[in-house]
Length: 414
Image 1 (cartoon, rainbow, N blue to C red):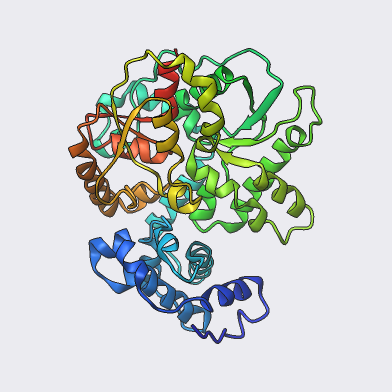
Image 2: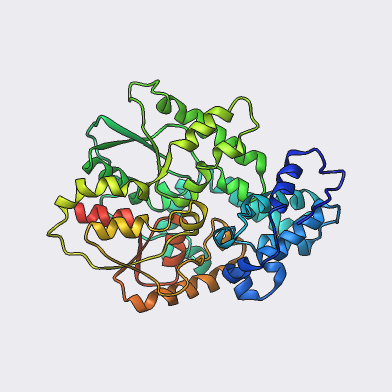
């Protein structure tokens, strides 16, 4: 696809990146078949191909409008289109560039700006934990919209962290909302790794991975979050503390994982952080990537344990963003769990997509309900996933327990 950048974008890094990505677009349309919003709305402008043309027009000098902004907002950034694209178009990067440009040129109405500011500042704030604690106490009294976002009571061992020291050590990002919404995911991760002889370390000062601000078009704020995390992790990465040197940074939330694995690209032009960011990205792994080496260590402890049927929803950030499609299924089955995916549309987004479920509630709930309908025939006792956003979003639409897969494994090891 030929692009003639307007003078405004000629010679800029964003313009050069966008031009390189657009040059690989061939207008084949394979992506429309796997785009959740195109399937729901049937509008070309609510599919990857249409959004690419909108971004291309803006880069060539067309004035974006609120309509342009709306179609870009409706994208889930699930990156399913990247998985199906035969040309390797990096749509996610192009969308980020386009959204940032449109955000700077099109002023949002005050209510939209207020909600986006609250999400950006609130989810990453130290005030989120006490607010969530209050929300849990008064959950029965909350309106349905808020109740959907507040999880129920945490399991008894949610705050039990292993105390043994091991020669093998990894770092763990706790996340911005996960410690308050679902603390058992992090402690279960540490307990499972401890059972396999791996110690989990947490760096003080590490917080939001940067995805929240970046997805809300606060590009600089997202980069600041990334730099703060790198500064917090670096003593452990370089082995500069008494705690020892970590061999990997483990992500148990796939949304954070896809972001941290991208630090190297995001900060490649920063002379102070480029090398460190590349190193951090290189040692970052999703928790499921450790399953092959954990299996022989954990299986002897699981052999005689009864387990119920599990239905697995693979998050988009895992199967499309990180291109990890079989690790959870293969690993848990090797450990003796009965696990199945939906027989149709297991590749499609559940509608959570970070802050999307708040900003686009109607589309988000339609996608959630479709996902739950696809999982229902499996008649599973528990639905498992690998991302806090997917877990809470799906739980809001079903009475079936929805949990992180590591919680199920941890429970079987207990």
